[in-house]
Length: 246
Image (tube, rainbow, N blue to C red; front, side, top):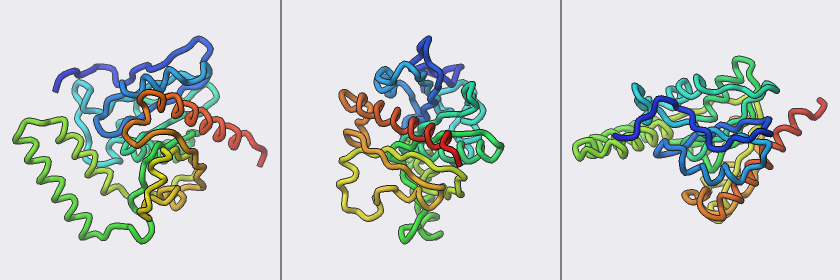
């Protein structure tokens, strides 16, 4: 693999007037450059930083569990001056962001969390049985071995994240979250793609916001501007809810 870095954080957007920092956790591929276009549409009140997954960092390797990814992630995050950490995770990166937020909230840190089209695998009638999960783990292991023989290390790493995401069993997060979903995904009739994607079963509530595009192109072209607006709306909602008198 080429292009290894020493610094896991990349500034995607920085302004002299920003008071809030959004950390972006990427999905499959683990690279943050695709989010640069989205970041440029953010309001000047926000700086945006991307966190490379371990495979892109000198001396690091992708863990085999979402908990392992979260342990790596939380080492590199810093709350803003208001004491709030603002975190967004895309796809499988949403699971990493969720587990990271859960761990940090457990230590007393305040975290505002937005997930983009990330599915909570372990909920309701669709919860895979233990046997199904074991078979899936074996399937991913065989596929990784095949790609390893071909020398396709990027695909091996992606399959490792997919296996980790499939096997991840989220524990309850003592906070509400925002879930951003592309409108085209909502059109699916498959019942497991219910609007809140299962996150209402493991959080204190889910605010659903729609964005343009499809799962794989939300950060491209005009869709990037729509997603930036959805992201701002999500963090504004979380800000207002946190500041609301109880």
